[in-house]
Image (cartoon, rainbow over all chains, first blue to last red):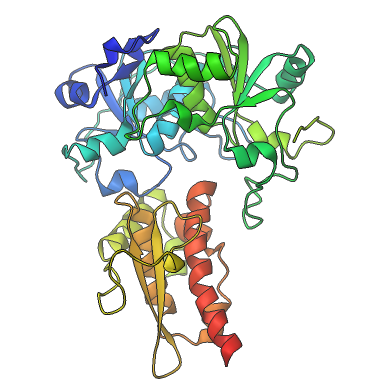
Length: 286
Length: 136
């Protein structure tokens, strides 16, 4: 894949390469953070110096379906050696789904100095770079978190209903089978399942993976515009809501639209299909 | 094993499972060689796991696994657990193991995608036991 700065991204600074991490990962003021779906990946070997943030145990409230609050975020950042001015570089498995999810949650607390390592863990490993099982010795940092602000990049169910009413643009990033309602997830896992299949009326289906190359890196801006503007009909001035099943895959697309294509008003509906497909009375299309 | 896992916190559990994953030994060549037949592939498992059930003289089964995805660390741990706990056990007991046991093993915070794949490994293994029961 070409150099990040040559790909035409609106905010190329939001991405760093594996080379950059190899050179600067242990610089003062930089904290590398791994965030995965597989809970065994980080302890099996991680980038030297990297800390782990777990999407479920660290970022989610453990009682309500919601994210951690101001105190929780400040405590988490402190424990990971992250201060307000730390440059956080996130990477992980599954083409950086969970890294993008974590980065999106960082935005809720105004920590905008956060980046994604292009290609994620897969690319780092494929390049034969060093991994260690040694836990980093991280000194607690001081972190002053603001109150969580859900108004800018997060959408709730009522926001989606309003968005439907004005025929706003929506992107369903799930697979075509989920979008069509053909597939509902396994009945053994009702915690993330849904009673109804289909998609939110008016949503276009652009599976998240269309934005990624085989090696997990992001496609260049021209290819991304073809996908989201040429095929899906978006415009950079649009108000856009993205969703998937629980908001992790759509975080990937949120990152693409916001940082790589420069869209100014994209919200991630993290309630996503697990909320919508279980909600009484909301409209559904198949 | 389940009781031992119940007493572990998230980090301890991950370490325990990782150590199991390190013990993974792939299906022996006398049972299968690459390319592995598609009918042994675990559906819905993105770790590209394969399952074999070898009939033993005493009527029990010996389970073998392969995991082709190099990132399939949880799947390798699952293979070790299934081999250690199901091989040599009465087939009717193997047949009744529920697939959602993966949440007790890996924790309730296991994502659905990961949980589906691991549960499918259980399902495929117990299916082999059910198949033997039906043919007896």
